[in-house]
Length: 208
Image 1 (cartoon, rainbow, N blue to C red):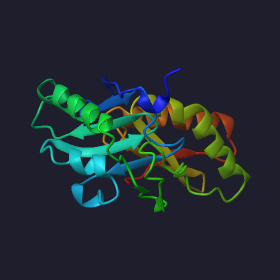
Image 2: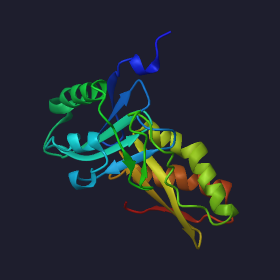
Image 3: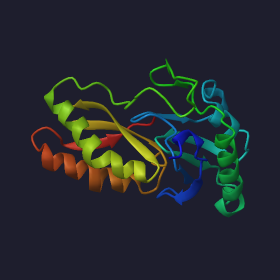
Image 4: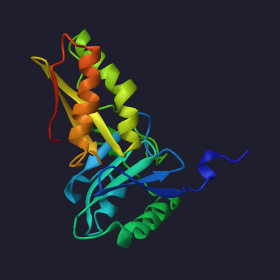
């Protein structure tokens, strides 16, 4: 039976609801379960070799890495038709050369095991719940919302509950996505208000 480490990376591109973001999906995990990292500029990529290399492309605006995919957000001046093959080829070659992906996750500043390029410490990035209601909100986000958001190349995390207002942060393709407001209000807010009617009045998104 072929060892997972010997199977080459295969990358395919998948559109997201955000026209500026493209999801590059691998046939193997890139980070450990629950781990993710986002970079808005080359200056933030000291511990993210793959993101640092991606920012060498002048059209790359944002890089988000999670589980088995990399979401790249481009500048508006270029079309995906002109760059998608170049990016997919680069990511495939980079990974199959055995290069490191991320050595330290930015949120927890925890070093990963560099001997395995695809490993990383678990990092859900939710703020720690302070009571049972907040714990329930995190549980709902993890069980019902996060899988769908990740499928679209993004991530949603809980920040706080204050006077009935739930504040979340949306990353990856969800950041700046034209349809994210509809997702927030028609999907996330409606679900939380239905499950926790006495505690949730509104859901808002805070910029990362």
